[in-house]
Length: 327
Length: 263
Ligand SMILES: Cc1cc2nc3c(=O)[nH]c(=O)nc-3n(C[C@H](O)[C@H](O)[C@H](O)COP(=O)(O)OP(=O)(O)OC[C@H]3O[C@@H](n4cnc5c(N)ncnc54)[C@H](O)[C@@H]3O)c2cc1C
Image (cartoon, rainbow over all chains, first blue to last red):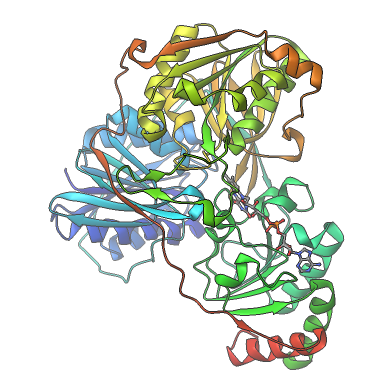
């Protein structure tokens, strides 16, 4: 069946909305292809039914469903085998993959196996006279490239959080359960352990992110930022230097190499605003910058700015917010 | 363990914005007059290779693709850091090629180098950030693949690696041969060569292979992909500064957050 196929990995039910980001992109491309949207849905079993319904409800006509105990956290080799098996039979023209931990490995490898054209980390997709026009950031977020893909099949990976979850558009859905046989002993790379980072609020879904940079000076400074995040009910993030220095876990890093976040409020503390950092937070609704250098580039992306030493500003800010929120 | 590290030469990614310009004809960054360096995470990859060699022996070969004339000083640094040999695939068009195309050429070069247990790359290049070279090489070389690896330990015949993941880390057991892409970590900060290493580097072998000699491998993922334009977006947001003493600034910010219904 030709058309647009999205690859949806469901290690747990919480991952469904992230797959729906791709469905929005697929629908936009499909409008001018008219060939229908399908999905490869993979997981261990639980959550797959619910995810199938959600996909149908958002306009996915055919769901190829694979359940296997190895289709779980980070087992890229297993996801690759299953996806390859389904897509060799389904032969879609365009495959969309979310460029998350699994997807950023999966997309290029799948493209090689399917003999497909490849564009990674797209932030915008559109159809144009039978071609696909994809936009992606380049040069550390300093520039935006437009690429035109004319070859089929094409594999496109999409940067997480760059496409909106679309409004529901239910279609009469079809499910095809596909049996995949994957032998753990034959996987060249096997995840033995998932080490989750301690964090009260996860960065991915936080509505408020308080982020610290090199100017925070060390782990003690981050204790102050945690207090601010706590009164705001938010999560703590960082630029690259604090992660590189080991002041905070690497998984807190925001930016080109780290996470992309789009909270309602992003507070950048002692971060200069290099484009590689801005690439991961510029979609935030309200951006506040606290920096002692009035010329720091972060002020050109911020909506509200405070020039000053964060150590003199964060404690009274925490106190004042507590007062305003009341007991 | 024999390790090949792929290094890319890029314009220094931390240059100020005023030094950044796009050549309209190619859609690529203007390189002329700008300092060229080894792409950020490629240096971390080299450090990981050197640490593995320090612990378990073997040979480290660095491999790069680009116009031979400009691949010089920056890459001497790689030899000074401790790599044993360097292979340059001389390719005047190198800087303009997309990752999928480059990976196909690098795979051909790696086959010509011959023996290897491990190929390392940076997790993303500092310029186009495509993140494709390692996975494509793995497929082309029928090797295992893990990307965004921050730590690597050799454990008889296999590797135990730590991958940066959305939810934290994955500990992954990897068979050899393998291709890994390396992310920065406190454990793999690039070493600084000493003067004697810099002198010794001058005597290390550098092989230059014309790109035309690399047999065109199938699987060029960039065929049928055209770069139409590359633009520098204009920023329009205007920042409103909150003035006063620290306590006043803090109070003003708290009030604004409340007005915006963010409290
Ligand atoms: C390929 C590549 C990928 C990258 N990926 C990322 C990424 O994912 N995320 C990322 O963040 N970076 C990334 N970078 C690095 C990026 O280029 C910058 O080097 C980095 O973002 C700078 O971090 P910073 O703003 O914390 O530090 P700096 O640039 O050193 O800025 C520190 C700021 O703190 C201010 N300051 C100091 N003390 C105080 C104080 N007491 N009170 C208030 N302000 C103070 C200073 O005025 C300064 O503006 C990447 C770079 C490359 C080349």
